[in-house]
Image 1: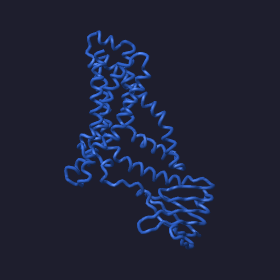
Image 2 (image 1 turned 120 degrees about the horizontal axis):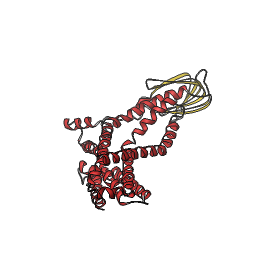
Image 3 (image 1 turned 45 degrees about the vertical axis):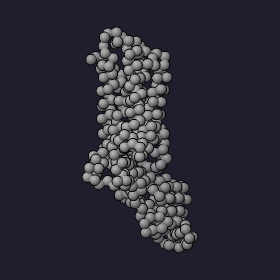
Image 4 (image 1 turned 135 degrees about the vertical axis):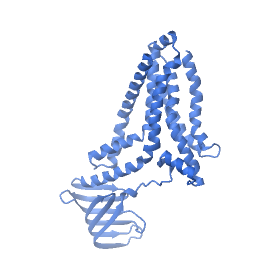
Length: 355
């Protein structure tokens, strides 16, 4: 039991180091992209936005970290001859796999909870935060020349007065919406504010231009409202944005059209596939670590990274093509890449334990 707890601690430590390493690599790029999208947003809004963006990567990054932890832990056991000592003591090698299986089970449950209940609503949360970011961007404008894209509203100003909040010598493009054509405005001054996701733009002493026919008109004042929350609205019938319980309920109640039933069934099983990746990666990681022994740790880690990337490429492309095609059922298509991986990993694992 002590040996198994020792292996479990090594796995948890290795997984934590892998997560930290990937964060160090990925976080700067994600942060730069986030700041580029909302350059004038408050720091606190950016701090809220970054964790939500990172959460969308969890179902793909965490299994990879677990895979690397398995390779490093069992590879070190083999390199230090500890695995040989375990075999010579009469301990069944399969018992030494139990710590990895226990950790895989816990991570699989956490991942399934995330992909079933949290991530389907992530787009809505990100959209709400982006609205907050737009509001803070307007409030944090500095003096001088200004260029902003607020949803589909484009704003360019020669200079901004932070004392009055007015933009001077302004160009504004109002996007086309129901009942309103696209319009270009060249105004002397403009003021913007956001309330409950509604962007209000008020302009004075302006020239209005229709970009289609070139017709123009002069006005002393014009204002328009633009609903920021409507941008990127996710239709509720798309299965990827529904909780798993809601997908099942709609399928059982017959509320899904015939053209979407296969997509709903595929989405349910794809979430199971994402969660089950830990067990496939456990077999591949443990066997790779044991077979590629001392002096080849870097090669073992590189090989395991290749396994993981290939698995996700097959899941993203092949599984969807098969599951939504005519040859396989949605369930069979979703599980096909994982089944192929298990057929490869099982004999690989058998060979590693017999060494």
